[in-house]
Amino acid sequence: MIDLKTMNSAERDLIEALAEVWPDYGRSLRDKHDLDGGMQWKFAKGHEYLTRYRQDPETGKKKWSSLGRRSPETEATYAEFMGRRANARETIQAHKDEITLAGRLARAHGLTRLPTRNAEILRSFWLNSVDTQITLFCGASLLAYERDSRVVVPGDLVRDERLMFVFDPAVESVELDGILDVYQDVVDGKARVSQRDDIMTVQVSGAVGLDFVNERYLLDRATGHDQADLLSNALRAPPFRGLTIASDGQPVELKTFAPQAFAMMAHTLGQEDEVWAERAEFAGALVRECWEFDSDQEAAFPGLGIDPADAPPRM
Image (cartoon, one colour):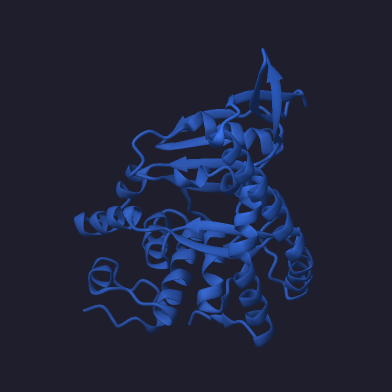
């Protein structure tokens, strides 16, 4: 029988406290990132212009752009920028001690199972809104379900040698160059990109590698039209967003698939991979304990999440 380890009261309180702080804290982190650099009024040819500057990560020099002459519109733009930046810095500072304490407690409870180097990539994708085009689908996805399920995922199931993502089928044109730029910036290296068997692999030497797959990669592994239809619908359903704490003690927002979708998708890969089969079994049990499969899903994926010892005998 699959053993689902329920969080104790201290662990539940820790996750809930972090989840309450995260909306304001996370939004402020994004604002601070988006508002990096600054704005400044400059005179040129007898007129005053509003300029925006950012620091070039490669050269360290400021890159300037003009936003137009001084006017009620540009003054409003300047005021909004300065106000948002000040609010972001104030919010981050106000919650700094809470976040630090949550990280220490999470580490003490053994809840920091996402490696820092993996977390840095996921945070950078989130900060730069790269995750609007891709969805995480690997062992780390299971960490997203811990808060709602109150179940601690076994460490061996969330261990990823590489991070896998699925291209959002609703996005007509993926900005691959932008994704690669963000990845290369965070791991500080030039990536090698290759394609094989419907998997696009991205690798920087010595860094965590990435795998990108499309809808066809999963549908081709489905058994029958019913499974394929359910998987196709699952890929287009609203994403599931969860929160975890990485090994560095800092929170990470995870955008992945709904637990039912993850279980079905993992099942398709589990036909050829033992680790994915174990993830599918665990995710299926988790759904049956904390959520539920609908009748169509149960019919197309019979026995998903049921321990083989508990399954009815075949006729």
